[in-house]
Image (cartoon, rainbow, N blue to C red; front, side, top):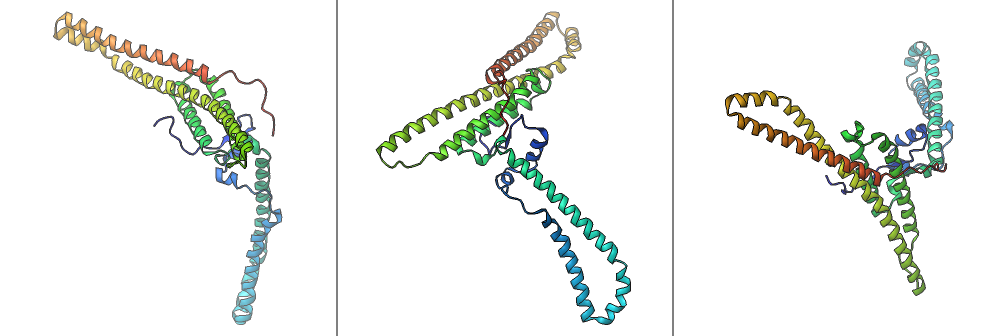
Length: 304
């Protein structure tokens, strides 16, 4: 699949956000986050379901005593033993429900407080969402690669800078989208037309600048993908070549020594060519990383 293939982007969270807050955000889908209520119901709504259940049980007992008084008189001594435990269950249920609602309320309030510290797909215009999806695909290609996991392309540096780079692009695309949405579609007069044309030109330049960042990340990811393919090939050749001595010995014993030497040189040359290509690709990936992942900004991100 091409790195440029656009899909719906995922929520991007500020990597500087505390883990507890980021974890709360990740438990919700983008649609749930987009439709997060601005106000919360009273915690005492948590007792409604237990009270409703208790009322139904009491109502059923009243109906039974009126409709079937003899049956009620027979069952009442037996049912009286369940009153105490039943009330206890309802009280525990109500208490748990209130505490659960409090936890959910606190979680929603925390997420709302940090609204500027995460970017949703709904925050982005169509073209911005496409760039964000391309960014995330490039980041996934790098972070899921064997070269990244084994530290062959400075995995520690990539692990630190890739999330920061993704967040920086997400914030820029969100700001760009906000300005696009504030821009009127139809000018009302010649003066407004000229101003709108200039505004749209500046927005286009801003978008192109962001796209350059995305393209650099994609170039890095493409280099990593190429190096990973060659790495897999070199590993396989290494495995195959472990039995070369035995193979060449057999060949030397069954053919002329000159032919055995020629075959040895051919096998060695093929392996060397792949290793050289892999080394070149790995160096290219490192150079692309230096372009796509500039030095991190020493200034901390401002708190929301």
